[in-house]
Length: 79
Image (cartoon, rainbow, N blue to C red; front, side, top):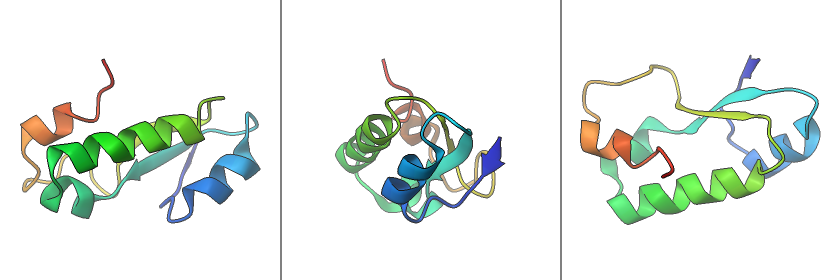
C-alpha cells in the first residue's frame, strides 16, 4: 500500500490501475470547509476513478484532524 497525496487522482488511477493500492484522496481542507454535498461529490468522483480498485479512501496526513466534524467524516462512507 502506498500513501499518496493524490493531488492528481486521474493520473494516479491510470498508473496504479489494479497493480498497487494507494491511500488518501480526502484532503483535510475539503472535510473542514466544504458543504456536505461537495464532500459527497468528491467521494463519488474518487470511487468512480478507482472503480477497478486500488484506493483506500482516507483523510490525508492524519486519520481524524480535530477540526473535522464526525458528521462530515460519516459522509465519506458510501452506503
